[in-house]
Length: 422
Image (cartoon, rainbow, N blue to C red; front, side, top):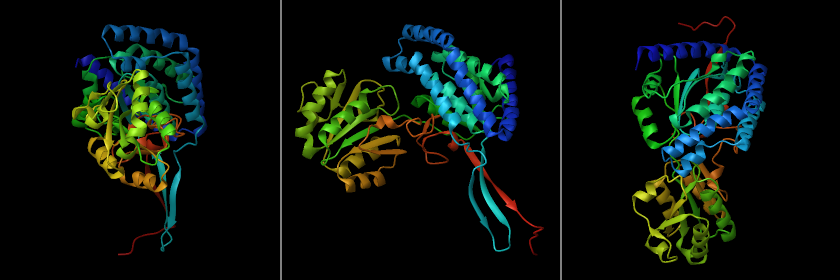
């Protein structure tokens, strides 16, 4: 890393720390006002954002990015409106900072309360999706955190254009301009410095991207990590499923958008209903451009089915490819998910409430779904306005991470001259 970049990143870290102190004291009204200004500015600068995005898409095609990656990268007027609307939804939510989670009094008269507070400075490392620049910035600001964003090189121009709109909005608000900062380089050495904590100015790192990015962050970070791991999602059609419903759900779960982390990668089907369900299901998937890979039993139902390998069941395709496996029963489906899944999102389709309840209890994933598409794994669909990622770990937060999850807490103690006896 050049001395110039090193010094630039140190300045970014220090200004983020100063902004975090101001944001921690900011009123809910000032934060909501700033978010509304950001939404308005993104709309007003949509032409510039789309022009920058077109440059990224052209570069991506030249680099032979996959169709799924290009879909993640692409913006249009509807998607820009979606970004602005998400920010407005975040602005309208209750402020999580200062929320009293619990209050109690001890027999000696001391009063205690547990209160939500911001984490501080959050470093965000992400790939492809330029909307994350706005979503992450908005969620951090709502929760009173400053953020330092480092987007992927494939979305460099889009991220810069969105960030320019954010900065313009912050300059006219009551909040510091440095509340939301974007590292202005594609130099990979900047990532390593961010992972080191920028001289103790960064409190948490959130990575959002492919397996190699997450692995590097978890290996190299010197600060706590809230990881968004790959989405090896499953849809399981139980013996007692409504098969018409199941067909609609599976089509949506796989093909609505294949490049999202909530896209189903493996379809599990009970053996008892395979003959009734699979031939038509496979035919419909195939006609809609989806490649089907299956076990030996599945291959017997349609000539288009290719053999599925062991590695396929561990693969997040993010493309129009799906694995299909026939299982003996509910427990076999759960065992398969336990072995091959990533703890992201898994669904059961059944009219049997006892089976659904057991699936909910036994499947250890961040999101467990009954009779709905796995593509509801989205912070907006949960009512969070947006998400900064979907955490598949066990500590601090799981599932879609919204503003309320980007907080920690402290205890407030009130006395009346209390001293501890000897």
